[in-house]
Amino acid sequence: MSLDDITKTPTSRAQRRRVGRGIGSGLGKTCGRGQKGEGTRTGGKNRGPLFEGGQFPFWMRLPKRGFTNFAHRETYLPLDLEAAMHLVSGDELSLAKLVAAKAVRPGVQVKLVNGGAVKLKRKLTVTMPVTGSVRKVVEAAGGTVQWVKPISKSARKPETKTD
Image 1 (tube, one colour):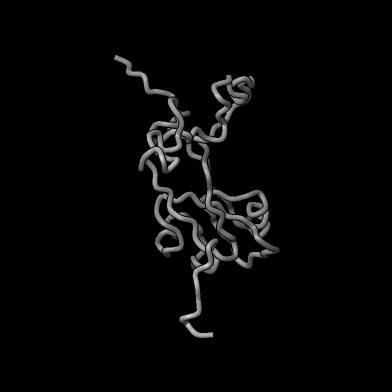
Image 2 (cartoon, rainbow, N blue to C red):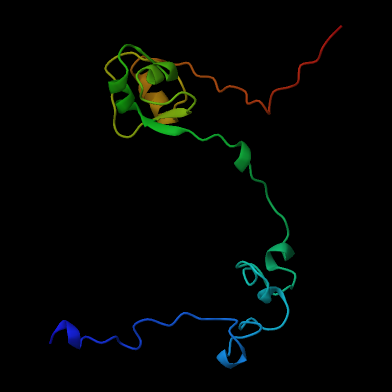
């Protein structure tokens, strides 16, 4: 067998559909799209998975329930207590010190978590969000947690002017 003997398999590649080339081609005039309607238009037939043919959709028939605070939720980046201890020296652990050590970017909300059985050998003063287990570990070693959750902008009361 040589390269001259190799022939193209008839089913190896489908021919391109040439539309609008006369009645005899079978795809002339309307080009296989039918007469009228959304499917004949440019960009038609792309109605999405929830489209039910014009029938009132199921998801709109269901009652509205519940509440979500998705737009206003606060998300924290978890940081292990042991890793934070290696990043910051001294007896104070704060978000400003982590930013100065380039452990986190400014503006990122970080929360200290206890990944394992960490036992502190020094007193720590923590001024950032912590989990309950981290609070217990720090206070068991004689340290303190001095973080108060700031009031969010939406929860603040508007200041009233007094004349």
